[in-house]
Image (cartoon, rainbow, N blue to C red; front, top):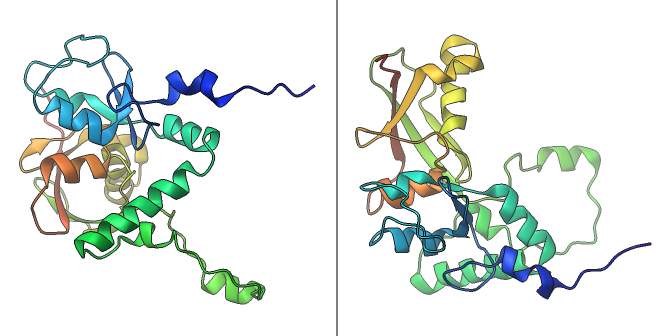
Length: 223
């Protein structure tokens, strides 16, 4: 027998404590595991260093370094709440149009064309977009004390984390992804946390600067 649960019964678990709306770009504090909308928690932590829900100290000086994108929670919210993802993308499209800004590739794909004509397998392979329908970011990788990558420019999802970049570099330079722990990633000479998403880095470390996002990589300093 199928058991149906009313959405309002799970609302407290998928709503942001700060704005009271459904979680958008869900971000979790690593110290206490409470989750909020990214825009809400980033704005809150610009003036505070404690969790807004439990009031536990996150970090005295750098609380923004201790929050991380929670993709699992965000996927769960989108699956539970009908049309939430489509509505949020539409709001993003409207925002960029209102500001006269170019639409990021991932957001522009929300306006899909309805075409009843079925493509042949060959055409489908040629036109297939290998990227997820996420907002994309351009990255420039610069070495500090390691071998230079043959391809220093990357384009990937803003949901990718610093750990993904470290593993990419380890695979290219050492042919062994497991050596990613020997790599540090820096932005503006500041070491980035492994769980930071590229979106988070752009917002908190690279704001008001030209693209591409410039990251440095170096051999981890052994203490």
